[in-house]
Length: 247
Picture 1 (cartoon, one colour):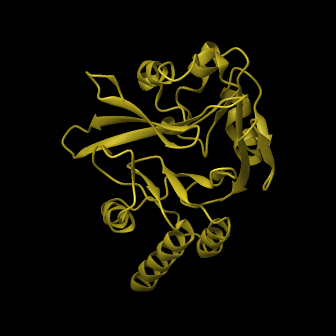
Picture 2 (cartoon, one colour; picture 1 turned 90 degrees about the horizontal axis):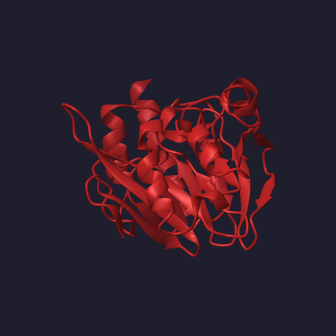
């Protein structure tokens, strides 16, 4: 569903109660790109990623086509970056009961200072119960980048809110696909390698694979449905090959 014809912002349910909000953007002198946020509608609704601050009116408009924004209870980020949490305080102003949710490191080094309300820091493996949905916080330090990185796994729908993993360029027009995203995402990374390539990257990706995700909620590009464990292991293999070729 298109929620803003001028920007092309759209919202689509990619799994039961989980909505992708997508906005295509034009990069001056570069290719088209896109930003996604994910809204989980439940007794205590949650949004994962806020989008940049200037994008907040578009994201708010999309959310309110699904539910009143003031119902939000949690505003969540993977790591401290403008497209993850640039509109955090705008969300907190629009949703009086909402609190920021992030990993313990992000809370300590950034969010506790910049957020207008104190964050709820999540320990590695901790569960956040929303009602029907439950989200497990997974520390992923330096994967793909940032000391404070973490992801969330929704146990009811087996959806991995996977942040910058599997970033795809373009407008992200298809809300959810089942075709290959590893090839396009690795091609995108080859031009602008934003991975930290930490010594434990393969171990982190294997841990994510063991969760058995069936939907990958990508921050940039289409969400993906299929054997998420196999795809994560294929990504690990590709990154290992990159490291070997660079050695």
